[in-house]
Image 1 (tube, helix red, strand yellow):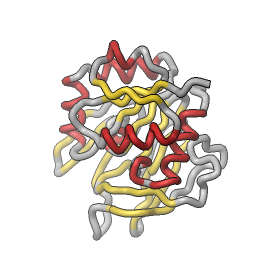
Image 2: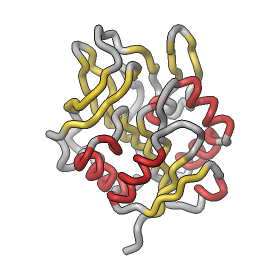
Image 3: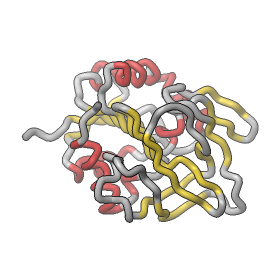
Image 4: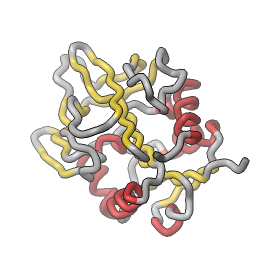
Length: 206
């Protein structure tokens, strides 16, 4: 069986080399590109992201990423958003009082975690829903987080995985139709992260 052809969207933000390496270990044939025409020929799409919400949205808009992502999801094709690539799927990001519109694929607000210690950095447990495809056989594993902002509540139908930093519960992953997103970094999460990517590669888009 041929390896799934996965596009990694290069919009000037994201841990591209680590993500490509982890996806390759999981069994994907990876293409890194910012060209929608090239990415649209592939089977699956990954949207990475590190840094500020506003800067990532500017990068997405600059390469035509909004149209690529929304069109991809309209066609019910599998897409994975990682870290800020997870956050920009939501309605809005609020950083230092600056509100920036996201893609609005998911309903929710990205805001600072109300905790003493920021960023939330390191390995943490997750609480996935019972029927999760992403976390199949990974329910007891830990994943690697690096972030100060997160979604606290999500509106609308979706399978939501949560995690907790100090007393704050936040959205750690989302599965809705062909869209999957993770606040943590699978590519930095060792064997558990590679297995999660393998689960995503072998899951259906429905």
